[in-house]
Image (cartoon, rainbow, N blue to C red; front, side, top):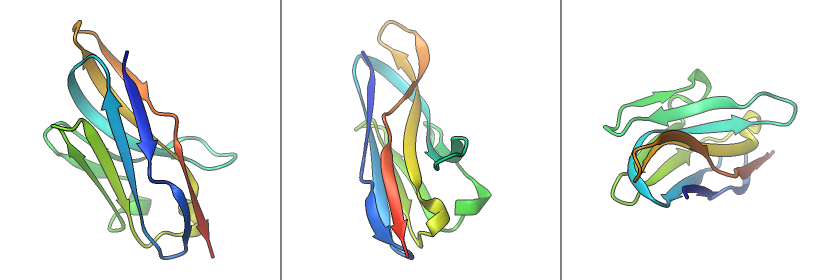
Length: 120
């Protein structure tokens, strides 16, 4: 069984920073592309940033220059450094990962989410 667990969310003031983490565990052969999504109340879940297994990154225009995605393949972990946070960044942040299990089956998994609250 594969699990993704996010951590690092919390309450931060406008302009502050948080570092979100996503840990992948289970019977895993390989983790391919990983990504962070954000879902604000009443809105669709939106892609924030993604990173391939080779470290190629992509960002939503709204977070370019403020957020940095990274990963540690040895630890099967992914991170999102969020800086200069704005009120519109407040959301539940979810990680997902394309995981190939030890049985050779590839599937997309999601974490349970971690909430980011930005106060003015």
